[in-house]
Length: 174
Length: 160
Image: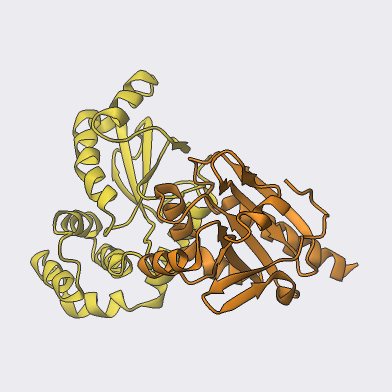
């Protein structure tokens, strides 16, 4: 399966924009498998450095994970204050508490303008952005979280432990 | 599997302990039938949880989703409650697998439905089908493609 919505300036991008490897993750902040993937991606970024561009897209399974949507909106609201990745990391590191009150305290801790943050989190445009991410995932064959795409191709093997890194090394992508 | 253009065989199966759902009652809507091996098994859970989140996109195409497996109705109820599912699960329980057999998606060896999808149009005609390997979650993309194609065909026929 290929990534039907190419990476664009609308995406949250971390790393070298001209890297030879683009890793897109569809993730859910309340998903235990994504919690497991979070440090793995961090290690991958350290290992690959400038060879990697990392993109995160929202795929909240909100009916089984009741805090997933508000967490996704929180990261998008933080993005409007240029702190997407700080909030993304905070949500994964503090995943044990994703209640609204806790998320507000994370926003304070990150130094966000809290009035603006609370207003933005309720902004229907942000919900549309999260829904658009979700739909782009569906149309690209995302069937669980996390799902990774490497240079636009769905990665269907195991991402656990060092498998993702080993796959990238052995595919001569670097 | 039954071919495109075939009239979808009618059936009536329990959706709650005292209510049956009959396919022919759903004329006028598109119906997505998702046959799956078993409640609680990991892949089915993922697949149905995914479709649960996709319902609003199915609804845009005037389509409703129905899950069918050989599990009994009480098992379905517990599973549906635990996963917070917002669509009916039908019990192809007695005679076991009878509807799955008529849709040619019954695995005689294991005694479960295969992992299979049908999209049926408003007139009850099968328009798309897909058989997935039992351990693979087929996702929602194929269904959405089929629904979009049907909507396009309809728009075209209205134009002509």
